[in-house]
Image 1 (cartoon, helix red, strand yellow):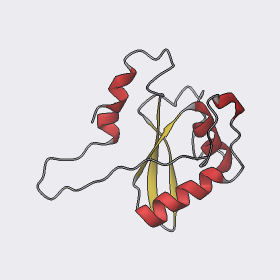
Image 2 (cartoon, rainbow, N blue to C red):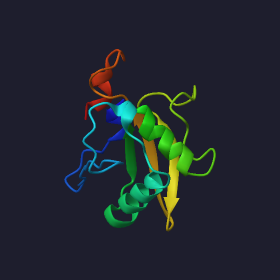
Image 3 (tube, rainbow, N blue to C red):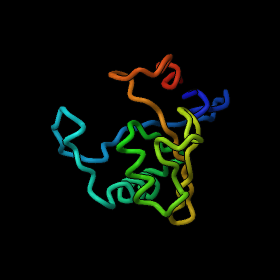
Length: 124
């Protein structure tokens, strides 16, 4: 499924990069249940990714992160983690900032979960 998210055509002129960002920086908590995501952090991160890094795709990992995006953006913009339409590897919404649009995807954590074949969501 990740190959759908990161699909690029075979071409000598295709160039892409991938980066990672934490929604809550400077957080050293091992237990994610103790992590609180401040209101507005999802919008702040999306604005940075789209404006400064020209992101076309944003891949969210974990229920708290997906639900923070769903909460921060207008209702219906991003599907919540448990929405039946929000399948792993599928587009769960789009964000438009300054006339630039990024598609948003949901993937499972690579460890500590019971998602079968979760490695398929990370194949490029």
